[in-house]
View 1 (cartoon, rainbow, N blue to C red):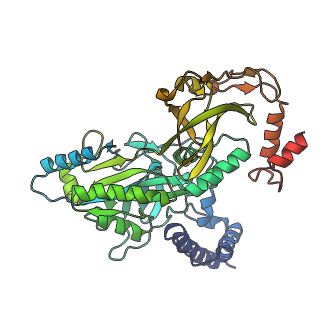
View 2 (view 1 turned 180 degrees about the vertical axis):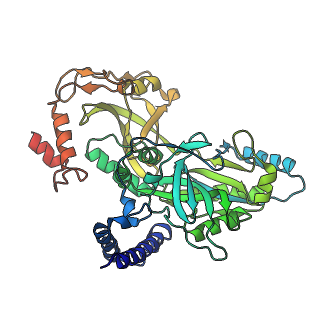
View 3 (view 1 turned 135 degrees about the horizontal axis):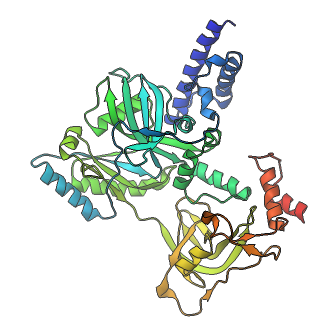
Length: 470
């Protein structure tokens, strides 16, 4: 095959793969089997092996991540990324519209209500249809350049699609949220626990930690997704006049937009939409912590303007996190691969967020003392997608005087060796077993070695490792 033939075939394959990525990751309507897709992808990889100059940042092969970075560079947003004022009160939603009526007298308001995805806000820049820069919010004016990490997120297009009634803009800066799917989050934490690694507290923390990895190859292994909700700058092409039109335009460009939105003509309709969203949001495969309310008309947004921190034409209504009360029966100590001693609450079983919860993390001794958690207490637990829910606090009104303060062990419960809190300031809250031959640490290291992300030894799980160690 000549270079010209290889270049033409590579372009053809890249277009096909991008098309099928869009159908799979954005539309959720795949046309190819995994086997057929893999055939296309491996043909592209073979071409790039034979003709390395065909590898560009936009190639589908670069979705797996490139070489590790030394640091993130700052990048300035073309327009500021402002945050939203938020509330837990329906009365404050009415006050929000009251302020708009004073700002824009004698005008009718139409609004859009969207799910508030609990992820990490990012800005994406496309020039001549190509994805060029992706950045975190940062201070709103300047963020971190995480372009190489964002290239690994399959639902972010590397090339924009041509909209129906317009051309691809010369320059467009869009805003959206990177998040971790709940299914992916649960699977990731199961793997981390199996490897004796600390599970992520919730999907948002997992997302933020993933995007700040200096190794893009690690980011590529994380189940990250992306949803778009706004736009900063548009040059060349016609900018939509309303939020409803914008979401349709962004979808035509190839972005994943919110799966459900509500168009409202009154405050009462907005409040009803907030209730409707609350009733369906647990069916979504991502965390939602509220509803975002926006004026639909961009012309009205221009008139309403901004405060020093946030737009006057939008706000977030946040839902109270789902919690439950139960009895703390006992506290056990888990010793991890690195020797860290983690207290775990053994609870009377309670239903929470669709599952029965029997155990919850207590994090560390200092956290237990700060919350004054005692054995026998009635405690409040909260689950926001995590595998091991968290004890939020104590219901003090239900204490009867029989509760017992838990004394954190000063020797390892596994081997009897001394424990220490020495180390970096960030880790000084963690007690660690000082014996590297501690059975719990040995088992942890063996499980970590056998795990899928390491040597991938089939059957090398907790049961076999415990037998071997014994």
